[in-house]
Image (tube, rainbow, N blue to C red; front, side, top):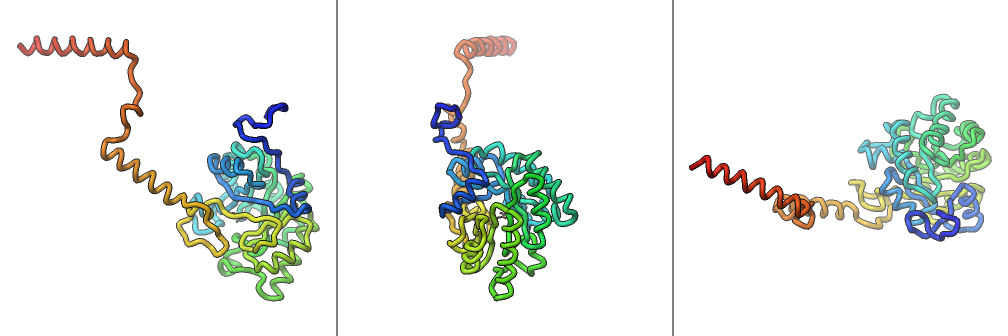
Amino acid sequence: MSITSFHDERGLPARSKITTLTIQEKKNGHQPITCLTAYDYATSRLVDEAGIDMVLVGDSLAQVVLGYDNTLPVTMEEMLHHTRAVRRAVKSALLIADMPFASYHIEPKEGVRNALRFVKEAGAEAVKLEGGEKRVDLVKRVLDAEVPVMGHIGLTPQSVHKMGGYKVQGKDLGGIERLIKDAIALDRAGVFSIVLEGLPREVAAMITREVSAATIGIGAGPECDGQVLVFHDILNLTFTPPAKFVRRYGDAAALISKAVEQFRADVESGSYPSDEESYHLPQETKEALDAILARKQMRKMAVGK
Ligand code: KIV
């Protein structure tokens, strides 16, 4: 953006850069915070241009883009590859990369190194990692390495086997106490925000009041400071029945199927490509070529006599 222009280089109204400070200000000013996942250049560009505050390159990449059954198989290299693509598109939103399963579970040093790789090699501005109290040491080390951290508690998909499936968390008093402890521990460690996934809204509301970090809900009710959804969920691109909390804002599956079927029909019927959709020779070249072909034809006829 030029200093004199109210539009960016794409001709869009200029939007200021969202940082972790903006997120904090939004929480303090009771302004709802928006977040969507994205995994590639085209869709993250649209998400950014639509004015979403935070773009999360989620490890849900494993399921919605790579076709795995859960988030566990996705690797650091795959997450870096997609974060780089999103980085090229996102100009205004805060870009957060999700640390994949086993990239921070073994050695704290390895966790810090992997967090730094997202910033240095892929241009992320923050990382997200799952878990509460047990991650406090790691969160502090990552913050010491100057990388902002988003926490994630409640239904944490990387713990699918330990949880015995994808189950709403915090439904009994013991569970509520654990979640509140987790949220407070992460908040004290210095995370700038916490994803609250799959919790009763009453519990998410209590946590939101309790912590200074911005709470970003997914299946955690409306009292959170902001909301995140998976891009493919809101556009019917997941091939599975949506969870209760998903609201569909469009039907990209229907749109894509219709377009692809029409393309196939047009090619098969010969209506694509038309003359208008074809390149043409310059008139001069065409005339010269026609003359050559005509001479060849005459020679053929003369030999045939
Ligand atoms: O990976 C992901 O998409 C996430 C969001 C659902 C918060 O972690």
